[in-house]
Image 1 (tube, helix red, strand yellow):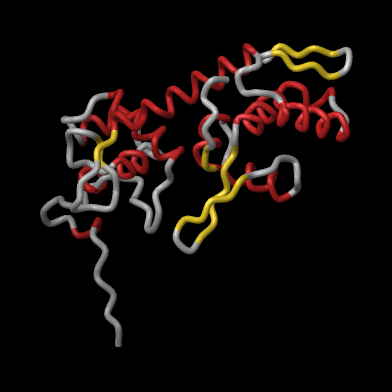
Image 2 (cartoon, rainbow, N blue to C red):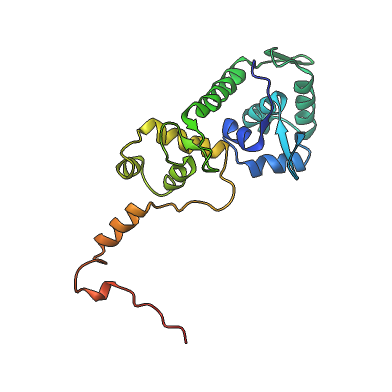
Length: 212
């Protein structure tokens, strides 16, 4: 696997299709080891190629390995060069080429996601490149809206940009307060469908509560 950089748990989670919390538990329980990097006042955990390879292999071999076998496999991978695609454990030989090709494809996708993203000095959230639309806003809307609905709300976007925003948010989750999962435009349209704005139809309106 040519890409030998370390990844944050959220980046690794995107590449492996696992949640960062699952990877955190794997580190806490000693299944894998993580490097640490201080970011401000917090400590960030990082996974390298050996951990990615092991976790990808574990998806396929877990039922066939004893706990001792898993530890042996992991330690062997830690000693193996990231550019070596054959792993030998005694009389057993494991071809890592397919695993490495799969990981490299996902890592390439992770790198390309950044090409879709721009940054404005005026805001803390990254923007979809060439627009003033926050990436994490689009990703939040995708939780409950279809791509078609998002494109209707934001005609300046295309399907690739929406899909890239969703994937980017998986690898780089939003910090702080999350965005709503419905756009204001969509919310108002839903209220209109319910008749909330029909003239003279007060049955659809909720009277404000009076606080004594």
